[in-house]
Image (tube, rainbow, N blue to C red; front, side):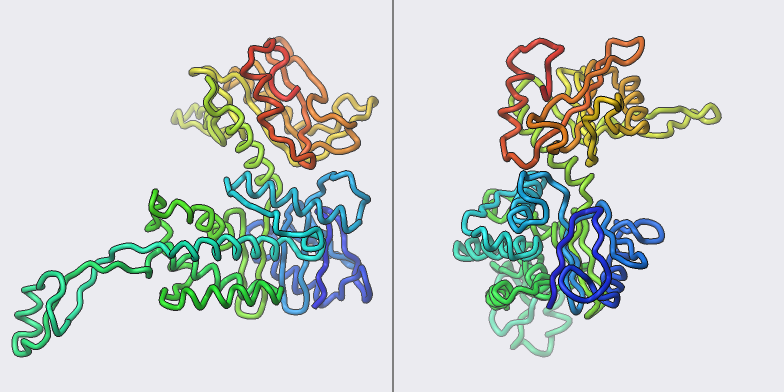
Length: 438
């Protein structure tokens, strides 16, 4: 079965042969993509089916339909030859790293070879990681809980249900209406993991992954098969007794719930695991900043603030609520607002705006007015066109204010820890004008 791989905003031409996709397969992929919430009104938010080609948009991930799979990878500058297997390998590694950070997962990928990263799609890599983690967890024992039961038994177990005994079994003393607690593995957490195994077995196209999922399904044979909509997520409590299952529970949410976005159509039509890069980049940076400032005098709020731009004169109702990506506070004072943008900015000296959107600047002006922060940063992914060094691209002073607005870039590909890059600049008392992301 053919597997296609393209970058976001790139096009895959229609036709036969290597590097082309038959129009009928393109139509199946578009039909699946249009069932996603990320498709937007009228579709087109994931894939755009044009006359001569199939064009990806700002959503990445894997779509699988009968006959083929399509992997859409982000445009991350990893310093490899464009279109090479090495570039694809490194992009997959960085995307998995971003997911691990954004979801606070401990993912060990050391067992995977370069060939695995080059040959397998993002979906198959994530499935393999899930299987590895689940196999290790099962070896240590599946979580169990005491669950309440009511049953009619030949001997007494627990306590007697007297009303039921003297109504239902009044004429049959050989059966006893019992109430008791029993240690069971048929609990909400295991049902969710079981449903994840079944779901991934339908999605996977890799024979080794499918075999491992079948083996894991056998381990869960005594756990009830529950449909995905009927799963009781709120019944799961992660505590010290099952802390080792936190990552598996998070990955189950990734595969089965809308974090970031999973699509499954009717039987035989296909399934997809999709990520909106704007949301993923925001969560990734937000989590890194939170880690960097943990234990300091600064407090980080993600998607917080929630102040309104306007108030209605008719009924004093607030309207147009704001949600800055990252707010950094010292005590009760907002010291820094960071807004992430998954866009490319330029370094052209003949373009003083550097490709920064007018709408993005207006948004930051609203934040400057509402949150009164002395520093605002628009943070973009770094790319080779900006030079070798990430960091501040340009600095501006807001007209008639002391507020400084910066545009900055963050290099996802180099793998450095953000703590090393910004913690000392914020905490170690460096001059106020040279704070974050220089």
